[in-house]
Length: 446
Image 1 (tube, rainbow, N blue to C red):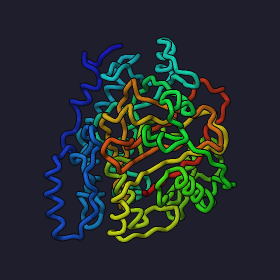
Image 2 (cartoon, helix red, strand yellow):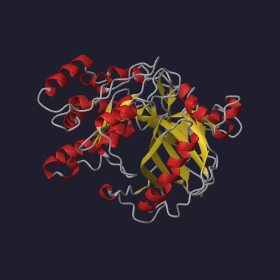
Image 3 (cartoon, helix red, strand yellow):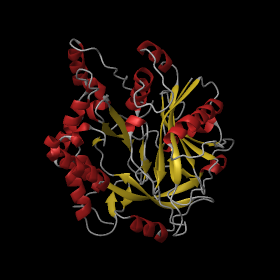
């Protein structure tokens, strides 16, 4: 292995971490207080951390961009300004340049050797005889190596259609490419999720206890949905099936709300168009080949409340709670669960999940997703060799993999979330079809 300029890459990246986005919380609280005198107060989620968890790598000291709400814009203007300010520093581009201009071969990082190409990492796994337990698999997974918050302007944002902002759009497109280029492959070992009981004696993967402990579980479903490419049939048939599954799976659950879904099929030859106005998510041709989670301490609460009070981007049954009713509902435990069901047995690009105990003390890195009317927060993580990964070999259409994206319980007694990615299975036949599945997102209330 070599080190860039005699130092591990991550040490250089940390030196480049942009300080302008790490404002102390007190500053934001003062600004929010001043604005509250002139506009109705926005919903600002309480800043939460799991007991024992270090602060996240995030803007604004970790507080939500709702703290920067301007006349009801949910902080989108402030987040957009921060996105361009970060690009202007050139720090993210510097990391890309370091990675791409490094000598051939593995790159030395604090976490271990990282690889720019999948094939290089796979060769490393084979040369070092990295073994997996029975039913498992050793393979490369992609992690970010940039320990700084990032920003994404989503495709529906009006900025992309504004001719006067073409220069801004070009800069944003370059930054989006750079986010992907600031990642490396690292060796990891998959365990068979069906064998969780072998690693945790007495723990069934088909149990709520597995979700509480690991943030990962499995379920059985025989759906009556005949066409998962028909978004309206999915909403009409599959959403209620998944809601019923969740209510039966979790003792004490009083309500389950499935609010959107995605279909993944690389080889689909029909219309892939996304149409949010008509509640059609489109069909994804790409699999999320980057270790991430969909929510975090802020966005778990914000997304839940905007669904309950505004029915915002809810593809499921209509809900409308008053703010007081929503607050009462959210004062009790609630969780966000993603459920993934194959349309046929999975042969290639399996969906893989990481168990909470192996990263419970690891800070997450926030990515801000800027819409016209909201700022979502997703998370990324740097590599650890002891991350506890699970997959479901040859996952069947009746097998539903479940992962936790958020839990309101913060005392450390249960998992807060899992993280996940897609991966390329090097042991699959060369002509193996890519995964065809549907993923629904939900909230479960107790």
